[in-house]
Image (cartoon, rainbow, N blue to C red; front, top):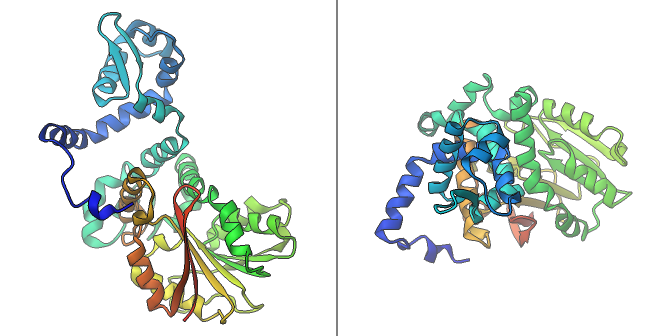
Length: 361
């Protein structure tokens, strides 16, 4: 899709533009109303009703008072998630409401925004100005959210990992084909989190060994999550802080493939160049480095690009204060500055990932 044409001209009438502006102004209200409609089961009730439901019926079935039901329904009506028949006085589900109810991506995004981002985004401007995740103070005193993942409240942690895994896990099957086309014997998974990719690799190839390099708390969580799974004895660990200037990656035994999935978006471009430089130092001419990211300017659909650019404020306010969802231009520049060359780009992986296959220049 040519985003230069989409985003360089006006596409709305004055009336539509005004409505869009007010939707933004009332965005937090619409979000919370819609979340309650979803999680209370009202959207489901409306979907399952053949002829729609009255306020009284919704009140009785949902447990909300008629007053509360009217607040929810009338807000949802003008937001576009429900429809209303003024003759029969019955509500039904709109197309937008149907997507909110049935699209797993919408659910994952909504839970992530409510549980992880909502409170912290109040401090977004401070984070933008200072380059520090000011919103993270609502959960703990860590410098980055990654240091505190294992200590986040249970629901926050659940929504964070559900968001992270939903996007990456749907890409793994095609990613395995790409990485294993070169028949690697030893893979280094940098930023491997709970070990989902590593488990896929050892399941895919009975001879491969995978080393996960990550922060010590994540390594502990990974060990618990992978224990007892087939092939987990071929998953090794390398506790490391990639932002520590003295840290290194394992160079022995020889690494055939370096894998970084949804990892580099957790760092600034300067930090990315440093991290890639550490990978270059352990690679030879035959090794390949694979970067899997959701690049916003490589998306097939405009909705996907919108979602990705709205994730960047999470990185600013809560994750670390200085990273974002990158464009290909930004990421390629960092790759080339670190001594690597992009050999191949694979687009359309899973739900919108791209894989950059890189080699030493």
